[in-house]
Length: 457
Ligand code: CS2
Image (cartoon, rainbow, N blue to C red; front, top):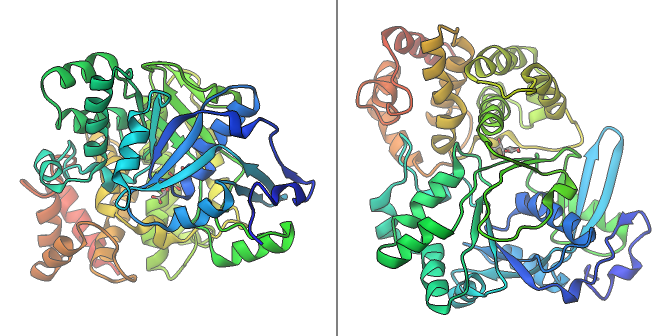
């Protein structure tokens, strides 16, 4: 028996449920990329806001590729459980904010209609870094977007045109992916497909605030679903497992109304950059280092890698001495305490967070996580050995030394490795004119150091 409106009444009393009149809520949010992260993050904040009395923010989820989430949630009337786990145990909560899941390739017309509906005022996105079609050096890849078709930008540019002709009002587009200035990237991509009056209206009245999102959400494992079923008595194919911690910092720049996401702890601020860069360089930067160095040392999970003294030493130095030194903290932002909290979160043994999941798409991740810090720290005269050690770990990973490579640039990078030794590979990526040189162009000393670190193992 599946979890659904018909069976939710039989859930055990310790599964938290909100009591708002779900069926009466208009659909105010369209979410593009409804994976586990959205279900454990923005949907929970939206559920909090509606439980506190906000109305008409029900979510229409959109899968941009597969029908998997549709199959998980449609038979369940959009209901699913969030399980938060740490040493103290497991807490369960039913999330009611998601109403429908559309599969874009199968039903593009329904997606366009949801985006054009006058009740829709906000679009949130979690489409991973590669969903933004950026150049390796940063900035959107206008040529690739124009020829690709079916990108997030195509759906959103169409929404601008449709809403203009229908007089449906502007929307706020909220990127929730791990990128520096994610709102600007999204804005520029949509603008690249517009012209004339639609472009003018988009630039004047729509809003693309930047955000920092944070919650560790490993991919749900079959075993998690079996354990949950044994505990709640019904099958929930849409369940997600996560940590208790969550954070959402949002630039307070909306085109129209917004849910009171702050009821659930979200912060609306004038400038997200200090939070966004601290999170990218310290949390995500440490995560990627754990992934490549941990896989290289034979580990499978984050909590194992962070418990390995040799890996941990590099990761702690990267985070505390290098990433933190590259930041300009906002008043009251305590980077030391932030680092302590991150290490404790990584050590959470009840989350089976695969290093391979974090290791994927490295070409899209290393720029904001490591390369920007390398450039800044050279200028500031800060030691960069730990970050270079992590970068060497990535290069070894790309050579196929620690399992399969899952990366949109994987073929290109593997071909480069076949044609070069370590020094040549370092030059091809980070030397003058190199693939990633717009983010960080290594000087002679850095190139030699990185080459040596790549060859070390
Ligand atoms: C991780 C992130 O997979 C990855 O690249 O670093 O998904 C990380 O778990 C989240 O950003 C935490 O908020």
